[in-house]
Image (tube, rainbow over all chains, first blue to last red; front, side, top):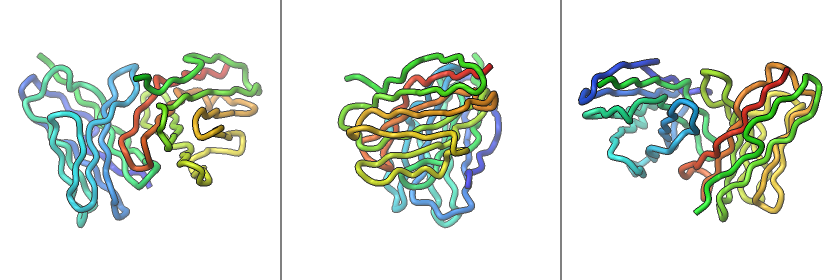
Length: 107
Length: 113
């Protein structure tokens, strides 16, 4: 089943913070986060694993609450380059992605 | 090193024709995935290959869709008797193993007239 992301869209000014949430009705083994800019392919941001391990490439933090079957992505001091659509993905191996959260950062 | 490549980048076809989309994963990656993204929509899982295991085909929308992966490397997604609702961007991704970060190709934009 598809995870549910919230909010669907968020608009920020540079330097502001945002939180994107991802909820699943199924027990989670891991949560992946990707960002897709308009007209481009999705790019990996982070994996959060059951047990607390995290793997990521950018200075973006996230949390994974196994009990609540939720993950949150924290974007702090946002930059213009953060604009794009953020997807969370759940399930081991294959990923089932949420519907996406559109983030727009204005100067 | 080279990333995931897909061909063609664009494909326009007529309703009822068959199409083949190709994906070249990153060398050494054992896991390969196909997704479909309709305009303004999310990423829809289609099929997942992991090593020599039987592929997970649970996302294929109909029996008109099939995919194979030859020699554990290149993959071809075939859509038979294309319909207008098949129009979308088809994305391929690979990872070093199942569950790891996925590297996406640039996608093939399919338009069915």
